[in-house]
Image (cartoon, rainbow over all chains, first blue to last red; front, side):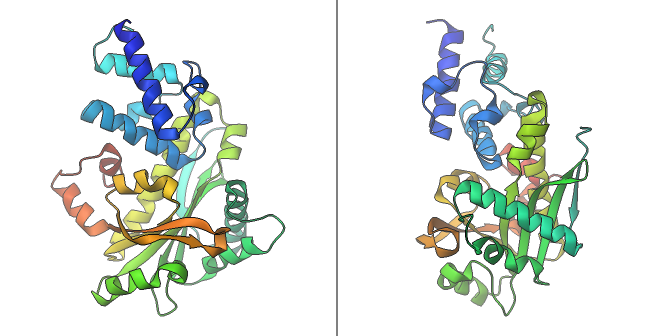
Length: 83
Length: 210
């Protein structure tokens, strides 16, 4: 498994655990706003990613991520994993 | 749409009717109230109370979100219906409290009218802006604590803000007996932490930034 595959699995795990969604529903193209039932859930996801990736996350950058793929790319950048 | 987002403290009775309608619509969608009853008007009746301040978010002049702050008075707070026992010791300790309630964002409208590429950022900015305005107002009028009744499914969010649970889980009769938890948030302590640069979560830092 490549580092990017591991990172993808990690991001999918965080989303699935936080939003209580089946992993099959979460693909790279899935829009984050479609996964969250309300705006609080959107922030819960942000909190979960902050817990996972630490204080390197910047609010203004994270809220601009639209798809699961965007989050994976952002996390890859944080961890210096080639996307 | 221009996506011109604004926030204000509502002072217009006509606008309050729109706010009430939005809350009812979102609560119906969540299953908190049924569509064939008058429970919608029941849950929003305190909006007209002079001790309740209602904030609205408008997107190109359309109301897309709201939150209310019911300041404690001799009439009590909406959540006293089930959590009076938990709130009374706080009152007896001399703390000034207000209940943050009816916090809704019109997600359906946003989904139908906003480009998908802008949806997350606009929804986040509405949520953050409403919370920020209610906190700023609370600090301005010298409140000590915010209190909330929340659905347990959202406990992670409120606990991440630093809110502490009081009492046990109960059922809220006015929202179809949905499970409810009471939380207290010390806004003054958070403001002090913000001044010292001690806030740990990025969301809190954003909420208390000037």
